Image (cartoon, rainbow, N blue to C red; front, side, top):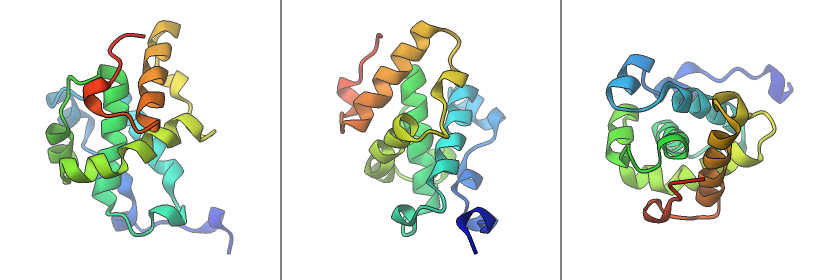
Length: 143
């Protein structure tokens, strides 16, 4: 059986832990970040590297990396953790990996979610910063 024919059961799919668009909006999370997080999570499975990870932690980390890429430090890890059922510690454990997937994985096209070349530059710069292990306090605010 090839990886293309394997179907992930719903309870194992980290996308199931993402908040609804309405819930995300109430928490200040842009819908574009929610969509980018879903693309990142879809690129993670069925990768063996993430087999032991809590799905809610992966969802929180992907959503936080995507949110930080779009709005910088305006949305906290606590807010994203509450929305995805995980903790800020779990988010920090995986956010660099999730940002790296957004930058390195061909199936994740960040440009689709950006409204201008300038915005794409800023989003890309913040994702690369996170990929390199950078912390939130030093996150670039401007492109």
